[in-house]
Image (cartoon, one colour):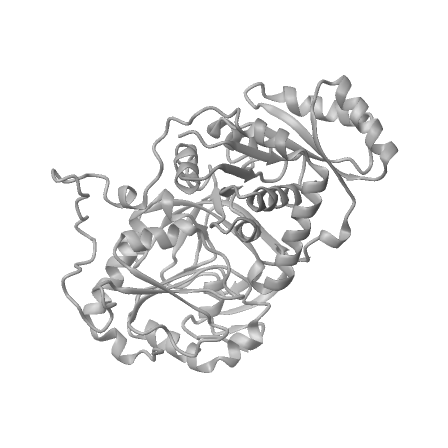
Amino acid sequence: MNIPRLVIAAPSSGSGKTTVATGLMAAFSERGLAVSPHKAGPDYIDPGYHALATGRPGRNLDAFMCGPELVAPLFAHGAAGCDLAVVEGVMGLYDGAAGRGELASTAQVAKLLRAPVVLVVDASSQSRSVAALVHGFASFDPQVRLGGVILNKVGSDRHETMLREALEEAGMPVLGVLRRAPQVAAPSRHLGLVPVAERRSDAVSSVAALADQVRAGCDLEALLALARTAPALSCEAWSPERALFPHPAPSGRHQPHPASPAFEARGPGRSPGGRPVVAVAGGAAFTFSYAEHAELLTAAGAEVVTFDPLRDEALPRGTTGLVIGGGFPEVYAPELSANEPLRRAVADFAAAGGPVAAECAGLLYLARSLDGKPMCGVLDADARMSERLTLGYREAVAVSDSALAATGTRLRGHEFHRTVIEPGSGAAPAWGFTRPERRVEGFVQQGVHASYLHTHWAAEPSVALRFTGAAAAAAAAPVTAVVATRP
């Protein structure tokens, strides 16, 4: 597979990676190129802006959660058929999982993809020193190929001249110069940028402005030429079907897994095509999800249908599985609470034993209350905003059998929240964390698996198969008879 590609990195967070990466994606897309957008690390928010810029799903490449061996295959899966791929880095170029060396760093992703790196430097408080900074990043790891620099927040023509002269002495190409442009900045809050779904029209304008800024300040031809120097990747593209059913039958078709749903039986919880219906929460309050999750559910045999807990007063018709991912329910607590019909439908579904997978925001939504506002009441727990940011990678093992994971299933994930829930775990916890500290967390009760932990199912596809199997089993039971569903 030979897809031209660039990794957009920086010396540190806040240097302008998202500005440059999103602007480049939009600018190249406007030229008629099919651009594949990617984000190193676990972040959910930046890929939303990438998707807006390119019209394609923003995809994450996380070597901690998925393992280094899946980075290139997942990249190849997302970039198939594209003319160019742009990968936005995470933190500083060489920053990764704490205490794990290069693991999950932008540098590791660049090496795994054999991709040239463009370093975005915040030049607002330096001139000739920029050459020493860039030289250090270029020489720190000889396997990382630094192909050029984009200077951000340049103050004047004189400032630009000094920066260019210093980098010319260091032999480093300047591929772009961006002046300070506060009007392009996207709004942020306690967990980073405000997601696209919450400011759609403004986000469109912001992405258009980023494209204009990058087009005016960057040498797009030189950047495209650099991207085309990336050598071919020899890996096989990841496939949700192969991930779930790795052993093909003699006919060449993939053998169904013993736990896969039986499509022949049609019941009240099946779509017209005979598939169990898995409802996935979306809308402004629940924006965090990885594209591969829906792909795995579909490949496992589910009919994936989205719904918006802010607007829909019932679950989709025939729902026999419910996925409520991450997002910002704390911002929309009054509106979520006011939608009493849907809260009641979710509570009824859980009480009837329907399989529910809830991560972070989903955990809060299932609680009895959030900041004093009534939620679904599925869990005997209350949640509230906190001053403390909980952030970091986790190594976890399932300590209770659930619709999502069998006891003993090991996954790597991450936590990212400014809320607390009390108690932090139920009588049957969801996960036991082994690193960085030992503790149990989350809730398993009847068909519900609820936790703060964000996971990437490509790392352990069996969870998608197990959950779809639970939804298929629910389709054969009278679960849907007690659930209010919309037409």
